[in-house]
Length: 306
Ligand SMILES: C[S@@+](CC[C@H](N)C(=O)[O-])C[C@H]1O[C@@H](n2cnc3c(N)ncnc32)[C@H](O)[C@@H]1O
Image 1 (cartoon, rainbow, N blue to C red):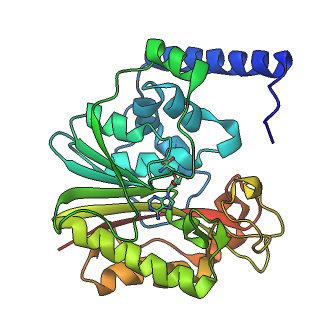
Image 2 (image 1 turned 180 degrees about the vertical axis):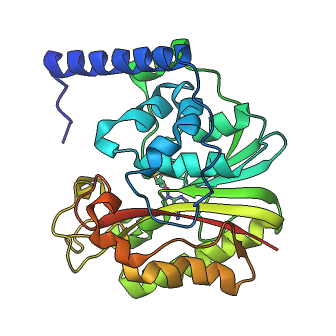
């Protein structure tokens, strides 16, 4: 079946959207960067809260002026600051990018690796041989070529996070942003993976990240959690990768997050940088909900290998 060509109205709306993004980037560059919220302590091992993005204004400003993609995810009202939290907490944690050997796992269409590289990091990206998400293209790329900053070079590697094709102790920083919740899907056949098997695969993935991190190196992960007993809808549902599974997924059961992530890293001798603030009970509060809907939350993990 062939995909119908977009109508003129759809194409015009898309063109306007891209031009608004371009104006957003230019406007961000003309706006002085706000100072770092120096009094804020790093709360890397915790749940997203609506009060966090304003305290990450400095980090957001560094990213939103880079290109169309980062400007969009930093400012989209739909995302309600969740990506500001995800990227901003990492920026807060890293004092110096220059020379840092970074592996970004599950890059998809994100241009954040290009940002890290431009800051001086030596960046390798990893995604499946057939990534689940298409890279940006067309008019948006042409406009970005004019307006966006040149990304630094990155080395793309095809492979699976379940068996990282790198030697031990190789990276100073391993990042994985909004990826591991997709372990609910077997790719490329897009079948649903039962929860027991998801947990087993997650353990492999985290062990792999620890293995390729250098001693003293850090691992930064963001993912999604949910109180599935109380959630009824998910605004992100059409983006699930699997076909024919349960009505709600794409997140870790909120009560399992400490065991699956924080206790897992601690049990493998890693330090949780800044301690653990994650509290599953917070999911009852609306200010902890993400744009996906009631009882959906986001969280980050920052561990250091000893
Ligand atoms: C939501 S997207 C990427 C988000 C991106 N990291 C960001 O910051 O916006 C998830 C990506 O993970 C990739 N992915 C899923 N399973 C993977 C696996 N087993 N190994 C490597 N990449 C995987 C998908 O192909 C997709 O590109």
